[in-house]
Amino acid sequence: MIDALNAVPIWLIVTIKAAIVLFVVITTFAYSMLFERKIMGWMQLRPGPNRVGPWGMLQPAADAVKMIFKEDLTPETADPVIYRLAPFISLITAMGTFAIIPFSASKDGTLWSVGNVNAGILFVFALTSIGVYGISLAGWSSGSKFPLLGSVRSTAQMISYELSMSMSVIGVLILAGSTALGDIVHSQLKLWFVIPQIIGFVIYVITAVAETNRAPFDLVEAETELVGGFHTEYSGLRFGLFFIAEYLNMITVSCLATLLFLGGWNSPIPGLPSDGVIGLLWFLIKAGAFLFFYIWLRTTLPRFRYDRLMDFGWKVLLPVATLNLILTAVAVALWPAHA
Image (tube, rainbow, N blue to C red; front, side, top):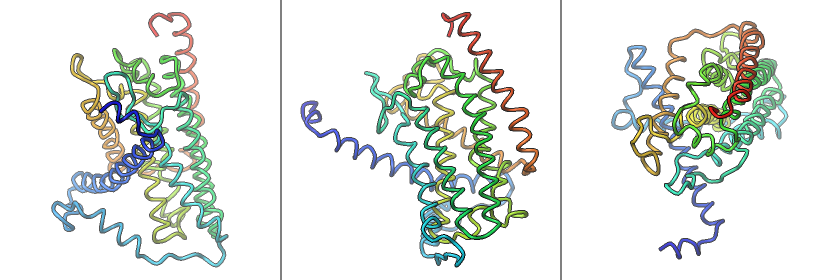
């Protein structure tokens, strides 16, 4: 059996892995959207989607059919090429991160991921940075002032908060002594980094919500000011691609929070198995809890004002993240044996 597996070309194995991850990611996106609507309905004392299929389980399929067959319009003043290209930039960069995220590991240490990159966390940040171009180009190419204002807001917000997010993650990299996601998880076998890096974790959570433009930091799409934000002129499937990218980014930051701070696929109870399928279950439970926290914020908190958002990012989060990074570096330099 092992000889037969060794004879399979590596490109075929990678293709099969990529197809499985793509199927799981698309399914997870669809049902995370349903999960969000049901949780919001429960918190706000209303039914939520419960008409299409048993318990409303076919609602994502109904939404997809409606989105695909809705008329796709392009404004006369738009730049047609960039206008059509922008949603795909956002979607491809959002999907690309899942290629290197490890979901579990075998007993021999083999990671359950499509690819293993030594500088995995840098790869993720590079891709998410490119995703800003999709939103910026969408607003600029629409030929209308409301999408343009939404895209300018988005660019300023994402760059501001990405800086603080990077600073909060560097403390974890110093403790782990590696930028590979698998090594970061292995170094949390005895102690999750959320304990020594609690300040970094809080900063990561706040910046992650702002980075993905979710409530209470969804100022990019503030309906009362920008009539929908950068995707005001989009409709049909192209609007849906932005929608998918937003949810995939939520899932990505939830997976990263699990890998960087919550021990990845390591068991929360010492002595219990944490590899293979069991490790995958631990990973999904932790990432799902972080996703639930996202929805909880959206349901309970009011929207921030834009100037306060920028003040908070530059005057509070960035100095605190820098101080946390300096203290971590000093502590590791003075007590390297405990790092």
